[in-house]
Length: 274
Image (cartoon, rainbow, N blue to C red; front, side):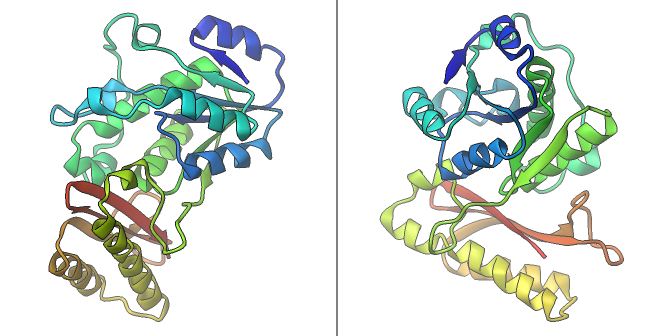
């Protein structure tokens, strides 16, 4: 696997490379990331990953400096997954001067759910992803469904800006008990880890109720929030929304149910398409 910390070197290496698949990450990789890398191989001649902890998407109360950096281990996992090139810039390479031009996603898409908890987060994500797209020039880009709002924002950005990139979603990878894999799971205590699958079980219950014809969405959401709170969680939301824009359900639009809550000091998110 080639490792390129500089934009110019990566671009030179990609000249004439054929069809390129790109998987951007912030490192601290888990099996969900690796599944995306393996999925990417089916769509391209060359698989490029990136590792860059993007300051723009961290809020003032989120500790950018404490985000786990596990570069050597990440490189080993990427090599095992068959990744061809890794773009690993530092901040000076990505932002040689302050980033004064930013992507502004539709506020209706980013002031809800995760965006309500993390103001400005998705603008920072969209800005760095657009910049990475311009650096790598991929034909396809892969993002996991676990970060569903991020996937929605980036898919709509690509479509509305007419970028020549196909966005391919990757299914959420789960542990045997249903817990969605996440770097954050490592912060759970033994007791919290045993309790954590409750979130996915509640989302599954809601999915099954809606599939059976239950359309009382507010009741389903309220009951799930109450169940989490009764078992020591601090819920942020359980929400049934349209997949395309995460707005309230209307007509027969395809749906997704999303949840976010803190268990102890660890905030977990998950979703299920309906």
